[in-house]
Image (cartoon, rainbow, N blue to C red):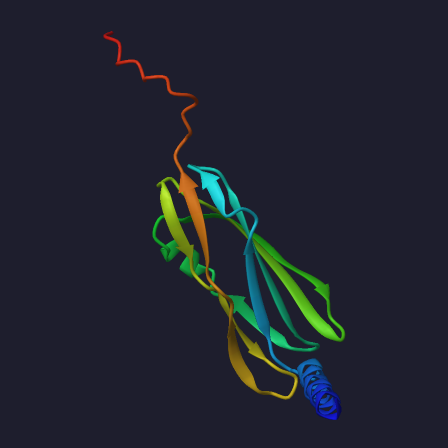
Length: 151
């Protein structure tokens, strides 16, 4: 029983230090999320990018050009940056509207942003990639498609 108490106390002590270290983290994070993971041909898909950083961090432009270079996807609109908080953490939101005219599963490449922290250190933060499924227009039921009519 004493050994069990010892291990539980040790575990709580270690995880407590982990949480303290995590709260003092000065890193910049990029998180991207798709409004929908599946669309039909030509439908819009909203990609929301959230950048979180310590207060007073200088952020560069997001490398959204990679969205146009991605096979099968087209960037149709870029919505300007919106800052929702600045102290103690800077939180910035960006939105992009994507579409595709080719059916299939496509990779939305990871976006990155250059930054300069208040202490002068510089770096680049990169988000994660996502996938989107583009389907052709669905055909209802088991009806056969009629042949083309002569003019």
